[in-house]
Length: 289
Image (cartoon, rainbow, N blue to C red; front, top):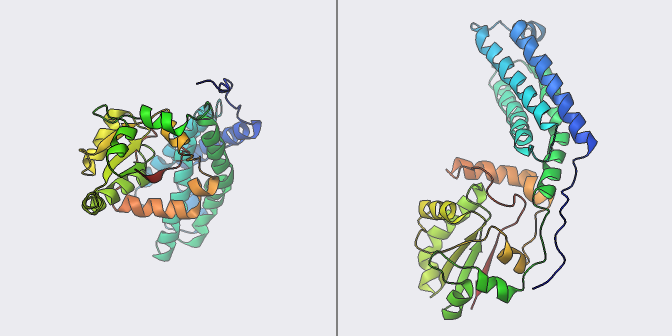
Protein backbone atom coordinates (compact mmCIF):
# COMPACT_ATOMS: atom_id res chain seq x y z
CA UNK A 1 0.00 0.00 0.00
CA UNK A 2 1.21 3.48 -0.84
CA UNK A 3 0.14 6.81 0.55
CA UNK A 4 1.24 10.21 1.64
CA UNK A 5 3.99 9.81 4.26
CA UNK A 6 3.44 11.48 7.62
CA UNK A 7 5.09 14.77 8.40
CA UNK A 8 8.43 14.48 10.14
CA UNK A 9 8.26 17.87 11.83
CA UNK A 10 6.42 18.00 15.13
CA UNK A 11 4.55 21.24 15.91
CA UNK A 12 6.58 23.79 17.81
CA UNK A 13 5.09 25.04 21.12
CA UNK A 14 4.01 28.69 20.90
CA UNK A 15 6.01 31.33 22.73
CA UNK A 16 3.11 32.15 25.07
CA UNK A 17 3.27 28.62 26.55
CA UNK A 18 6.95 29.02 27.42
CA UNK A 19 6.35 32.48 28.89
CA UNK A 20 3.50 31.26 31.08
CA UNK A 21 5.60 28.38 32.42
CA UNK A 22 8.51 30.69 33.15
CA UNK A 23 6.13 33.03 34.98
CA UNK A 24 4.68 30.07 36.90
CA UNK A 25 8.16 28.87 37.83
CA UNK A 26 9.27 32.25 39.13
CA UNK A 27 5.99 32.77 41.00
CA UNK A 28 6.21 29.38 42.71
CA UNK A 29 9.83 29.89 43.71
CA UNK A 30 9.10 33.31 45.21
CA UNK A 31 5.89 32.21 46.96
CA UNK A 32 7.53 29.06 48.29
CA UNK A 33 10.54 30.98 49.57
CA UNK A 34 8.32 33.48 51.41
CA UNK A 35 6.40 30.68 53.10
CA UNK A 36 9.61 28.91 54.14
CA UNK A 37 11.24 32.10 55.44
CA UNK A 38 8.14 33.77 56.90
CA UNK A 39 5.63 30.97 57.56
CA UNK A 40 3.25 33.04 59.71
CA UNK A 41 2.75 36.00 57.36
CA UNK A 42 -0.26 34.57 55.52
CA UNK A 43 -1.99 33.67 58.77
CA UNK A 44 -1.49 37.21 60.10
CA UNK A 45 -2.93 38.70 56.89
CA UNK A 46 -5.99 36.42 57.06
CA UNK A 47 -6.45 37.05 60.78
CA UNK A 48 -6.01 33.37 61.60
CA UNK A 49 -4.49 31.78 64.64
CA UNK A 50 -0.90 30.76 64.01
CA UNK A 51 -0.49 27.03 63.46
CA UNK A 52 0.98 24.98 66.27
CA UNK A 53 3.48 23.39 63.92
CA UNK A 54 4.55 26.04 61.37
CA UNK A 55 7.07 23.56 60.01
CA UNK A 56 4.19 21.78 58.24
CA UNK A 57 3.27 25.02 56.47
CA UNK A 58 6.92 25.48 55.54
CA UNK A 59 6.83 22.04 53.96
CA UNK A 60 3.97 23.27 51.78
CA UNK A 61 6.14 26.20 50.74
CA UNK A 62 8.97 23.82 49.90
CA UNK A 63 6.66 21.70 47.72
CA UNK A 64 5.37 24.77 45.90
CA UNK A 65 8.94 25.92 45.30
CA UNK A 66 9.89 22.52 43.86
CA UNK A 67 6.96 22.84 41.46
CA UNK A 68 8.53 26.10 40.33
CA UNK A 69 11.71 24.27 39.34
CA UNK A 70 9.58 21.81 37.39
CA UNK A 71 7.76 24.59 35.52
CA UNK A 72 11.04 26.24 34.55
CA UNK A 73 12.33 22.92 33.24
CA UNK A 74 9.09 22.32 31.31
CA UNK A 75 9.32 25.77 29.72
CA UNK A 76 12.11 24.48 27.49
CA UNK A 77 9.57 22.28 25.67
CA UNK A 78 5.99 22.55 27.01
CA UNK A 79 4.65 19.89 24.64
CA UNK A 80 7.25 17.30 25.57
CA UNK A 81 7.02 17.98 29.30
CA UNK A 82 3.22 18.06 29.45
CA UNK A 83 3.06 15.66 32.49
CA UNK A 84 4.55 18.45 34.64
CA UNK A 85 1.84 20.80 33.43
CA UNK A 86 -0.84 18.16 34.08
CA UNK A 87 0.32 17.52 37.65
CA UNK A 88 0.45 21.26 38.27
CA UNK A 89 -3.07 21.78 36.91
CA UNK A 90 -4.46 18.94 39.02
CA UNK A 91 -2.98 20.54 42.12
CA UNK A 92 -4.49 23.88 41.15
CA UNK A 93 -7.91 22.24 40.75
CA UNK A 94 -7.98 20.04 43.83
CA UNK A 95 -6.47 22.77 46.05
CA UNK A 96 -9.45 25.12 45.69
CA UNK A 97 -11.84 22.21 46.15
CA UNK A 98 -10.19 21.39 49.47
CA UNK A 99 -10.26 25.06 50.47
CA UNK A 100 -13.99 25.36 49.77
CA UNK A 101 -14.59 22.30 51.93
CA UNK A 102 -12.46 23.76 54.74
CA UNK A 103 -14.40 27.05 54.59
CA UNK A 104 -17.72 25.18 54.67
CA UNK A 105 -16.55 23.31 57.78
CA UNK A 106 -15.41 26.55 59.44
CA UNK A 107 -11.76 25.53 59.53
CA UNK A 108 -10.53 28.38 57.28
CA UNK A 109 -11.78 31.97 56.99
CA UNK A 110 -12.73 33.08 53.44
CA UNK A 111 -9.96 35.71 53.54
CA UNK A 112 -7.37 32.94 53.38
CA UNK A 113 -8.71 32.20 49.90
CA UNK A 114 -7.02 35.28 48.45
CA UNK A 115 -4.00 33.09 47.78
CA UNK A 116 -6.23 30.80 45.69
CA UNK A 117 -6.63 33.54 43.08
CA UNK A 118 -2.94 33.77 42.23
CA UNK A 119 -1.85 30.29 43.28
CA UNK A 120 -4.52 28.37 41.39
CA UNK A 121 -7.30 30.07 39.44
CA UNK A 122 -4.95 32.31 37.46
CA UNK A 123 -3.30 29.28 35.83
CA UNK A 124 -6.34 27.19 34.92
CA UNK A 125 -6.82 28.54 31.40
CA UNK A 126 -3.17 28.70 30.23
CA UNK A 127 -2.33 25.29 31.69
CA UNK A 128 -5.43 23.74 30.10
CA UNK A 129 -4.52 25.28 26.76
CA UNK A 130 -1.00 23.88 27.06
CA UNK A 131 -2.34 20.39 27.71
CA UNK A 132 -4.65 20.66 24.73
CA UNK A 133 -1.81 21.80 22.50
CA UNK A 134 0.41 19.00 23.75
CA UNK A 135 -2.35 16.44 23.22
CA UNK A 136 -2.81 17.52 19.62
CA UNK A 137 0.90 17.46 18.85
CA UNK A 138 1.99 14.41 20.87
CA UNK A 139 0.78 11.89 18.31
CA UNK A 140 0.40 14.08 15.25
CA UNK A 141 2.81 11.99 13.16
CA UNK A 142 0.52 9.45 11.52
CA UNK A 143 0.21 8.14 7.99
CA UNK A 144 -2.76 7.11 5.89
CA UNK A 145 -5.35 4.80 7.39
CA UNK A 146 -5.29 1.19 6.24
CA UNK A 147 -8.34 -0.26 4.47
CA UNK A 148 -10.59 -1.99 6.98
CA UNK A 149 -10.01 -5.41 5.41
CA UNK A 150 -6.24 -5.00 5.76
CA UNK A 151 -6.53 -3.78 9.35
CA UNK A 152 -8.77 -6.73 10.29
CA UNK A 153 -6.25 -9.16 8.83
CA UNK A 154 -3.32 -7.47 10.57
CA UNK A 155 -4.90 -7.20 14.04
CA UNK A 156 -4.02 -10.50 15.78
CA UNK A 157 -4.79 -11.66 19.30
CA UNK A 158 -2.44 -13.28 21.82
CA UNK A 159 -2.82 -16.61 20.02
CA UNK A 160 -2.04 -15.23 16.57
CA UNK A 161 -5.62 -15.24 15.31
CA UNK A 162 -6.75 -12.20 13.35
CA UNK A 163 -9.90 -10.25 14.12
CA UNK A 164 -11.15 -11.15 10.65
CA UNK A 165 -10.70 -14.87 11.37
CA UNK A 166 -12.46 -14.59 14.72
CA UNK A 167 -15.38 -12.56 13.38
CA UNK A 168 -15.78 -14.80 10.32
CA UNK A 169 -16.56 -17.70 12.64
CA UNK A 170 -19.22 -15.99 14.73
CA UNK A 171 -20.53 -12.53 15.67
CA UNK A 172 -17.81 -10.64 17.49
CA UNK A 173 -17.95 -7.68 19.85
CA UNK A 174 -14.78 -5.63 19.48
CA UNK A 175 -14.18 -3.18 22.31
CA UNK A 176 -11.45 -0.70 21.42
CA UNK A 177 -10.23 0.90 24.62
CA UNK A 178 -7.45 3.45 24.79
CA UNK A 179 -4.61 2.18 26.96
CA UNK A 180 -3.97 0.32 30.20
CA UNK A 181 -3.49 3.50 32.26
CA UNK A 182 -6.81 5.07 31.26
CA UNK A 183 -9.34 5.35 34.11
CA UNK A 184 -12.31 5.13 31.74
CA UNK A 185 -10.79 2.12 29.97
CA UNK A 186 -10.48 0.26 33.26
CA UNK A 187 -14.09 1.13 33.98
CA UNK A 188 -15.13 -0.09 30.51
CA UNK A 189 -13.30 -3.40 31.00
CA UNK A 190 -15.03 -3.87 34.37
CA UNK A 191 -18.41 -3.17 32.76
CA UNK A 192 -17.63 -5.62 29.96
CA UNK A 193 -16.69 -8.25 32.52
CA UNK A 194 -20.02 -7.76 34.28
CA UNK A 195 -21.90 -8.19 30.99
CA UNK A 196 -19.71 -10.97 29.64
CA UNK A 197 -22.03 -13.84 30.49
CA UNK A 198 -24.99 -12.22 28.72
CA UNK A 199 -22.86 -11.37 25.67
CA UNK A 200 -21.45 -14.85 25.30
CA UNK A 201 -24.89 -16.36 25.86
CA UNK A 202 -25.87 -14.67 22.59
CA UNK A 203 -23.11 -16.61 20.87
CA UNK A 204 -20.75 -13.67 20.50
CA UNK A 205 -16.98 -13.65 20.77
CA UNK A 206 -15.27 -10.82 22.63
CA UNK A 207 -12.20 -8.98 21.37
CA UNK A 208 -10.50 -6.27 23.42
CA UNK A 209 -8.23 -3.94 21.45
CA UNK A 210 -5.81 -1.53 23.14
CA UNK A 211 -2.90 0.69 22.18
CA UNK A 212 -0.92 -0.77 25.09
CA UNK A 213 1.78 -3.38 24.60
CA UNK A 214 0.64 -7.02 24.92
CA UNK A 215 1.95 -7.43 28.47
CA UNK A 216 0.21 -4.30 29.80
CA UNK A 217 -3.00 -5.22 28.01
CA UNK A 218 -2.90 -8.73 29.45
CA UNK A 219 -2.46 -7.39 33.00
CA UNK A 220 -5.33 -4.92 32.62
CA UNK A 221 -7.61 -7.58 31.14
CA UNK A 222 -6.73 -10.12 33.83
CA UNK A 223 -7.47 -7.57 36.55
CA UNK A 224 -10.95 -7.15 35.05
CA UNK A 225 -11.47 -10.91 34.75
CA UNK A 226 -11.04 -10.87 30.96
CA UNK A 227 -7.65 -12.50 30.66
CA UNK A 228 -9.01 -15.36 28.52
CA UNK A 229 -10.82 -13.27 25.86
CA UNK A 230 -9.17 -12.28 22.58
CA UNK A 231 -6.67 -9.49 23.31
CA UNK A 232 -5.24 -7.37 20.49
CA UNK A 233 -2.41 -4.87 20.92
CA UNK A 234 -2.60 -2.11 18.30
CA UNK A 235 -0.03 0.56 19.23
CA UNK A 236 0.00 1.95 15.67
CA UNK A 237 -3.79 2.43 15.86
CA UNK A 238 -4.34 0.73 12.50
CA UNK A 239 -7.69 -0.74 13.54
CA UNK A 240 -8.78 2.48 15.26
CA UNK A 241 -8.15 4.51 12.12
CA UNK A 242 -9.66 1.90 9.80
CA UNK A 243 -12.85 1.97 11.91
CA UNK A 244 -12.78 5.78 11.70
CA UNK A 245 -12.37 6.36 15.43
CA UNK A 246 -11.07 9.91 15.64
CA UNK A 247 -9.33 12.01 18.23
CA UNK A 248 -11.36 13.67 20.93
CA UNK A 249 -12.24 17.34 21.08
CA UNK A 250 -11.19 19.51 23.99
CA UNK A 251 -14.63 19.10 25.58
CA UNK A 252 -14.52 15.32 25.13
CA UNK A 253 -11.12 15.11 26.79
CA UNK A 254 -11.13 17.88 29.40
CA UNK A 255 -14.76 18.99 29.76
CA UNK A 256 -16.42 19.27 33.20
CA UNK A 257 -18.40 16.06 32.70
CA UNK A 258 -15.17 14.20 31.93
CA UNK A 259 -13.55 15.40 35.15
CA UNK A 260 -16.66 14.45 37.11
CA UNK A 261 -16.91 10.99 35.56
CA UNK A 262 -13.20 10.48 36.09
CA UNK A 263 -13.52 11.33 39.78
CA UNK A 264 -16.46 8.94 40.13
CA UNK A 265 -14.61 6.14 38.32
CA UNK A 266 -11.56 6.70 40.52
CA UNK A 267 -13.70 6.51 43.66
CA UNK A 268 -15.00 3.16 42.40
CA UNK A 269 -11.44 1.88 42.33
CA UNK A 270 -10.51 2.46 38.69
CA UNK A 271 -7.28 4.32 39.38
CA UNK A 272 -5.52 5.91 36.43
CA UNK A 273 -1.94 5.19 35.47
CA UNK A 274 0.70 6.39 33.05
CA UNK A 275 -0.08 7.32 29.48
CA UNK A 276 0.54 4.27 27.28
CA UNK A 277 -0.68 5.28 23.84
CA UNK A 278 -2.28 8.15 21.96
CA UNK A 279 -3.59 10.44 24.69
CA UNK A 280 -6.36 11.91 22.53
CA UNK A 281 -7.54 8.80 20.68
CA UNK A 282 -11.20 8.02 21.32
CA UNK A 283 -12.47 4.50 22.11
CA UNK A 284 -15.32 2.63 20.50
CA UNK A 285 -17.29 -0.61 20.34
CA UNK A 286 -18.27 -2.54 17.22
CA UNK A 287 -20.02 -5.80 16.32
CA UNK A 288 -18.84 -7.63 13.20
CA UNK A 289 -19.94 -10.86 11.59
